[in-house]
Structure formats: structure tokens, C-alpha cells
Image 1 (cartoon, protein in one colour):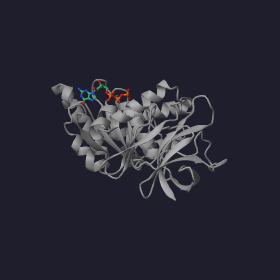
Image 2 (spheres, rainbow, N blue to C red):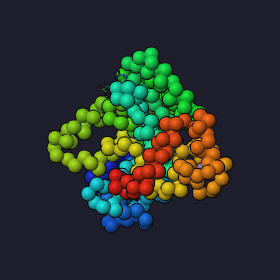
Image 3 (cartoon, rainbow, N blue to C red):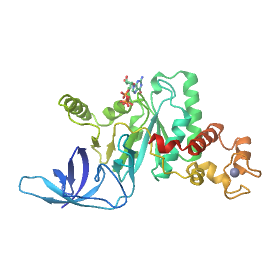
Image 4 (cartoon, protein in one colour):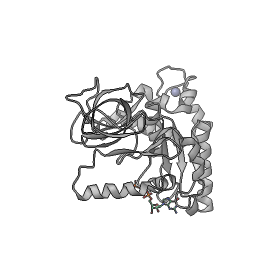
Length: 310
Ligand SMILES: Nc1nc2c(ncn2[C@@H]2O[C@H](COP(=O)(O)OP(=O)(O)OP(=O)(O)O)[C@@H](O)[C@H]2O)c(=O)[nH]1
Ligand SMILES: [Zn+2]
């Protein structure tokens, strides 16, 4: 029998079979995936093969190749990664111009990471209801900036529900990762999109009280119209530790387009003569904020920061 892993609590996985049953499953024996040193060989979003047993539970006997997977490095187990989710179709990055302010550096780092994983991103500008005229104006500028680069943007208020309907066709039948800084309104948005999800928050806190280990807890929240939202605690962005310096340019879409005209093919766009990117920044074809984000990631790369922080 085949199914989709929709929940992972410790060693148990909830698998939704193709005919709609939910089966609690465990991994059979010493199940290892080639190439990945992970604390959890199976993750939410994985398509798996099941062998059911008489108790109504099952063993996961095989896992289908993943289109992509998102990892977080375990802080205490060096070299081991924790797979947060597999086969993600897109990410919704919730951002706020204020309360709290999401920095363009944070957005750009997230976008670059998503490009590296080939995961499309939709920017969700939240909290429109409490923004001043000036802040709304700034939001419009941000929206224009990211739309021009090629990212889809949606403006809404998760608290009042205004504009939330725009998201519905965009997330239907897809697996969407929900991300964003703490306090931007992710939980509020989930509650608007999936009112039943309230239930879930309660379940988690109950689990806390009974001392259950929640760090490995990942869940896909089913959307009534089809599709899932993945709300993984602790994911702030994509692990970018494996981005090579030479590759960084290609993760900033508009910088990449201009870089084709740089004099040197290995141009880092920092000091080189004949750099088409620097010229485009000067001519305002590339936003200064985007170029700054690029430089800051390049600098981290020099200091090998990624390997440390993820
Ligand atoms: N005015 C206003 N407040 C909002 C909106 N969305 C969320 N909030 C408030 O912002 C605060 C944080 O919202 P949450 O939904 O908990 O944010 P979160 O992103 O889930 O935060 P973490 O769980 O820390 O990651 C809460 O007090 C919400 O009521 C909005 O659209 N407008
Ligand atoms: Zn250049």
C-alpha cells in the first residue's frame, strides 16, 4: 500500500493512504537513505510504501525519490541533519512591514535559499489593517520590487481576514511551507485558512505537558479544498550551508540576469572592472537593498558562517 506521510512524532509517522485511511506507521528495521545523514530518515511529505499488520499499524518499507527536501542541521549532533519536510511545492513567506518589521536582508536570504532548493516563494504581506499610510506606501514599494524580480506577492490581514481569499487558489492542491519571523502572524493565518487547526495547537500544548519530545514534531495541515500547509516549528529559512560562492549569483534572479554581461565569467560583482551588476545597481535597475543582501551573504560565505549557523 502507498501513502503520504502527513505527521511525524518521534518514531511514529501518520501516513495517509491513497484511499484516504490514516495509518500509524513505523520504520522497518535499519532503514537508511543513501547520501543523507539524517536523524529522521522519513519526513512529512514523503511518499512511502507500507506493509500493514494485524494491529492496524504498518511498517514503512520503502520511500519514493524526493523532488526536494528541507533540512535543518541538528545543533548538537554534528554532521547530522533533521529533515523538516520533503516534496515541498512552494513556500509562503509571511512578512510584515511593521509589528515586527521584516528586514529585506531576511527576505532576500530566504529567497536565495529557496532558489537553491528550487522552491518557488509567494510573499505574503500581512497586518495591512494596522499599517499607517506611510507604511502602506512602503509595502507597495516592496511589493513592486519583488514582483519585478519575479516573485508573486499577496497583501492581506490575517487578523481581520481581509484579502486571505487571494491565497486560496494559490495553495489549492499544493504542499506549501509556511515561514516567517516570529510574530508575523503565521498561526493567525493558519486559523483563518483552516479553522479546525485550533484543535491542533491545543494538542501540541497537551503533548508538552506530558513531556513529549516535540523537537521532531512536524505536521502537514490538510486544506479542505485540497493541499497541505506545513508548519514546522523552528524553520526561519532554508539551510544555505551548501551554497557555493560561485553559485550565489544565480540565487538572486535579477543579479543573475545582469551578470551575463560582466566582463569576467567568474565575476563576484564586488570590485571587478566591467561588472554589469555594479553598473545596474548604479543605474537603479537592481535595488540597492538586494545588492546589499547579496554582499552580506557573500561576506558570510567568506567567513564560513553558514556552516556554523545551520
Ligand atoms: N493587527 C493585526 N495583528 C495580527 C495580524 N496577524 C497576526 N496578528 C497578531 O500578531 C501576533 C502574532 O501572531 P501569530 O499568529 O502568533 O504569529 P506567528 O507568526 O505564528 O508567531 P510565532 O508563533 O512566534 O512564529 C498576535 O498577537 C496576532 O493576533 C494582522 O493581520 N493584523
Ligand atoms: Zn559582475
